[in-house]
Image (cartoon, rainbow, N blue to C red; front, top):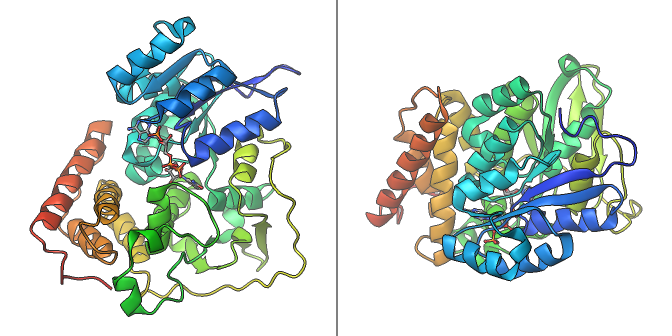
Length: 401
Ligand SMILES: NC(=O)c1ccc[n+]([C@@H]2O[C@H](COP(=O)([O-])OP(=O)(O)OC[C@H]3O[C@@H](n4cnc5c(N)ncnc54)[C@H](OP(=O)(O)O)[C@@H]3O)[C@@H](O)[C@H]2O)c1
């Protein structure tokens, strides 16, 4: 497969979808720090064409994509060399992800918008450095089936899954007792429940240990992000939900752990900088220079706590969705995506996120996932159900924490 068979000295060709986001920018930092190892062949952005243009000037990709046709025309005008090699929308991002020259695609679009481009990369036979966890939340069974069929590697970028992946190296999956995902607990770990109900977008966006995009930051405050990561781990590592546990670790030093049947726990540690896991995914199985600040382990106190279900009810929704199976996790993601947007706009309160998503999930009767359309239909259904729920004001004074 592409990427596995590079000749000595040959540069790995990288496509990045979501290049203007937090993960996309960190990926380009890793590439900048390793110019002899990587070259950029395709970039896809959303609305930030200003930054994309600077990236094009620096990396000269062979194909780029943006969100709208107008923006695509504007980019093509600025870079005559790209001529017909500017796409837009989902199709454009999918063409970037599946670009013929790429050995590996970094999937770093946020939300359900990353699903089809990631699948396109897999179908093109590229290894995937997966940051867009929504792809596996929405269609884990189908996506992993496609990856197996194409013989491509799904290399985790999420720091927790990268930690698990690293802790699994040299071990047999059947010797795993539990995967333990760590969660920082976000900004409201010690806030009184009353205070959480009044949490503002600015407070939810003030993550204590990680700097990330807006959606994942809010999801980290509700722990919905951890719910998604539990589902992601289920598919990525092929383990049953009862083997995935979560513990709160406020210092974000241990990025996750694997407990083996002999009682040993193997943990991966490091600074809270996504360039570490990105570098590991890009160069796997080798290790390369990741431009992260040196990490000093001395003087650190590490604590591990059980997540409080009253404070973090969203976490339980992962296990409910996995039990329901089929389209349920796609519904979980889409309803949350709508709720986070509405929360950031100030339409709903912080704890309404859980109330709304839980109600939408409860109202869903999952259908069989045979094709991609079954997944996308569930996504549409959930968005409409969540919007209706919010519009009717049911989340106000309804179930929350
Ligand atoms: N940030 C982290 O530390 C981190 C850690 C682990 C996992 N992840 C996962 O990585 C993914 C990206 O997160 P992020 O924090 O990097 O998000 P982000 O900073 O919000 O960036 C999102 C990227 O997606 C692009 N985008 C959004 N909608 C798009 C669309 N419809 N078509 C094409 N591109 C679109 C954005 O383009 P514009 O900005 O140009 O509009 C941007 O490049 C998420 O799935 C997240 O869960 C992130």
